[in-house]
Length: 349
Ligand SMILES: [Zn+2]
Image (cartoon, rainbow, N blue to C red):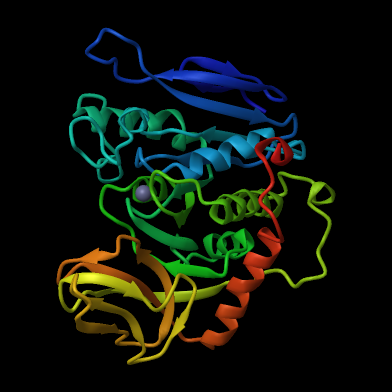
């Protein structure tokens, strides 16, 4: 197996290393580095990247990667795993989705070594990390004050991508087209198959989303024969979560401005005409009810109980399968991942 070079550091087969990959210096005359953790098996196999915080305020993925690194069972039986917990280090420093030049890094790929700050960071990530990889998992959350039900977005028309998306094991898969300038688009053009995991909200840790992410990545690595399946957790009596595919989704918007009382939550099934939320005045007067205009499952939701007319409130995915089954699977996922109390950090380690 040939040597792998990242950020000028050579990583031989069988070694685990942490690299501080230099990116653009700060104007305070301070070096800034993208942290990279590489695990290489002695045995040849696929190279996979897992990235988080391409949007600097999306922190669930940072915690997912920390837990993966601490997992005792994470001994690769083949291949190479490249973990990048903070791609947009500048955004993480500022607790902001964006780059300091106000650009969205996930719209600046492939970038260029002579481009804008965001373009240089995108280009560095692409050439130093993605170019080595046959597969990648990019971890995201909802925007600030918006929660997402754990879901995978990917090009499900590609048979292998779909197989890996199903292996991840979350109840909802979204067949999502590629966004211009996104990491996913640039990676796919490099020939890398990418899953995008969306769960929870920005600037918060969401325990269910973190656990579903850790388990999902472990499942994908097992599917790629990079982890021995006997190291997997003991099988539970419950059926594994079967994912369902949504080809379309839409945001339901506020019909009037006012104070919100939600009637539905993430993971709920809704029918056409179902009331989703009531909107009223500060004096208790009811202004209107937001209703669902199609049947589906709520996969995203805004959390601030104040809306202006036109604000996006509920993200609803539409399925061709039986909705009740999907809801049952969402509950199964919650039961498997959150059986009782939330353990402390030491217990998780
Ligand atoms: Zn994001």
